[in-house]
Amino acid sequence: MHQGNQTTISEFILLGLSKHAELQKVLFVLFLGMYLVTMVGNGLIILAISFDSYLHTPMYLFLANLSFADMSSISTSVPKMLMNIHTKSQSISYESCITQMYFFIVFVIIDNFLLGVMAYDRFVAICYPLNYMTIMQPRICALLTVIPWVLSNTVALTHTLLLIQLIFCDSNILPHFLCDLDLLLKLSCSDTTVNEFMLFVIGLSVITLPFALILFSYIHIIRAVLRISSTEGKWKAFSTCGSHLMLVLLFYGTIIGVYFFPSSTHPDDTDKIGAVLFTVMTPMMNPFVYSLRNKDMKGALRKLINRKRFIPL
Ligand SMILES: *[C@@H]1O[C@H](CO)[C@@H](O)[C@H](O)[C@H]1NC(C)=O
Image 1 (cartoon, rainbow, N blue to C red):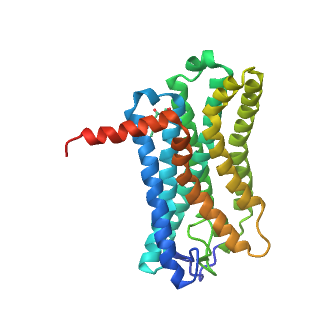
Image 2: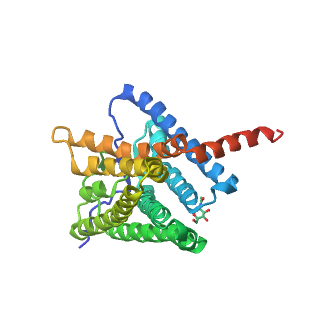
Image 3: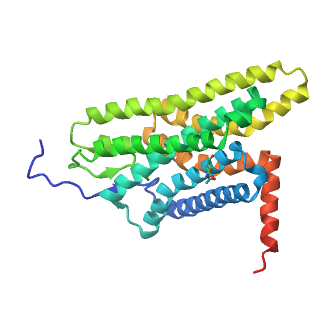
C-alpha cells in the first residue's frame, strides 16, 4: 500500500569515498588518472586488434569485446564521481541513479561472461586444436558475444523493474560513490523480500555459471597440458592462457575479497575499497595484463603506433 501523504525522494546523496575535504583533491587526481589510463589502454587494445588482421582470431575479438565492456563499465561510475567532487555536490537524481545502477549491472555481468567465453575459447584451442576453426566459426563467436549482452540486459531490467516499485522515504543517503543495488534496497522503506530474493538467486547464477565454465575449461586445459611430454611444449601450450588466467584471478579475487571476507572492524570502509578495486582496478589492469605479457599484442601495438607516425598531419 502506498501511503498518500508520504513524500517520495527525488534524489540521492552519494557520500563518496571520503568525508575529509583535504582528501577530495587527492581522490580526484587519482581517479581521473585511473580513468584516463583505463580508457587509453583499452582503446589502444581495440584499435590494435581491429587494425591488425593477424589478430582477427576469436581470442583477440573476445579481448576487444572485453576492453569495450571495461571502458563502458568504468564510464558508468567514475565520471559522475569526479563531477561530484569537482562541483562539491553529492547529489544524483533518482533517474540517474537507476540508470547508473542498470548499466553498472549490465557491464559487470558482460565482463563476467566474457571471461567465461574466453576460457572456453582457450579450452577448445588447447584440447581440440585441429577442430578449433570449425568449432569457433564466426557465427558461433558472434553468438558467444551476443548472449552476454542479452542476458545482462535481461538481468538488469528485472532488477530495475523490481526496484522502481519501491518507495524511498526516510533517508536518501548512500554511503558509496555509485548507486549500488544492494544499498538502494537497504534504504527503501518498502518490503524488499522479493528484491533481495531475486538479487540472491540471479546474482548467484550469474556468478556461478561463468565461473563453472572457467573451472571446467581450466581443468581440461591443465589435464591436456600435463599430458604433453616436453617441458617446452607444456610451457608453449600454457602460455596462451596465462594472461587470461591472471585476469580471472584478478576478477574473482576482488569479488571474493569484497563479498566473502568483509572486515568486522570497519565494514563500510572495506566495502568501499573493495568496490573501488572492482570497478576501477579490474578494467584498468586488463590492457596491461594482456599487452605486457603477450608478444602478438606488443607487435600489434607497435604497428599501430608506427602507423600513426606515417599519417601526415
Ligand atoms: C566482438 O566480437 C565479435 C564476434 O566475435 C566481433 O565481430 C566484434 O568485432 C567484437 N567487438 C569489438 C569491439 O571488437
